[in-house]
Length: 218
Image (cartoon, rainbow, N blue to C red):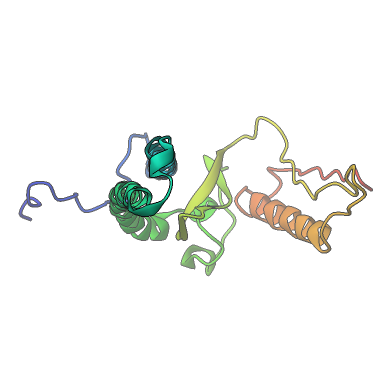
């Protein structure tokens, strides 16, 4: 195949990471996607915050002179500050969109290649389920999303064996101001615990894992 044009991003490939096995390479690739998403969103948020601070500083500086607080000079100062703000935010959004497009393309390639322990419940690998012969390298606990990219989901993976138990927070029964936790939150926590337990049992050989469930609230 011909090489991609100069400056163009290479086509993503499943398993494009270091590791001794395909399972480990896919695990490491997913973690790389998570780190890339965290970095690009943090950069976008930082750029927007900088643009907001700069707009505020420029507006305040222009209005320090009492003679410029009203009339056309004030309007021009606000317009100039807003224009610079818009330019900075547009550049940040362009960079964010470019990185998200690359991550989305990688996700479309990686997600179908994930083995059972790392795959989502909607993956075809679950259709012909057979108990595994050995424990997996890692397990998928869910998906990670950010407000800036709600359509992009990155698998939340943890290595096995677990170094500590999984804590599922159902919220406080009552906070210091007397407000109760939202209705249904406890049921949602119980459902999450059941699904995680089911997944952990499903990706281990029969009898290889004994889960212990503890409900501190009773």
